[in-house]
Length: 111
Image 1: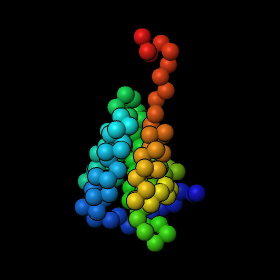
Image 2: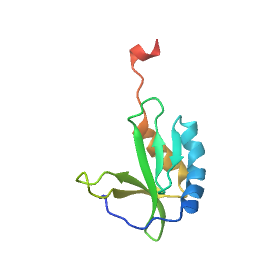
Image 3: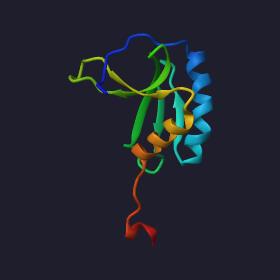
């Protein structure tokens, strides 16, 4: 799918309610989750602070979906959004986020 610009942000309480359903799965996968005041949900790998993936809830195909949030093409451009999965599919959303934010163990790191 192609990234798109989306302007409608659901109310913060709606985003938090969806994030509360997704967060336990992400935490079980070893990730940190925070909901920012602007409605962006930040998912972080605590083992590598550079590994952060913002996601948002936006309308897609007639219902709320989790969307990946990407930087715009220029520094001052608004972010772009790519549909990931419907908000009800927390298992798939958590799986995809865990895959993106996974840091592989190296042989030397196990010592």
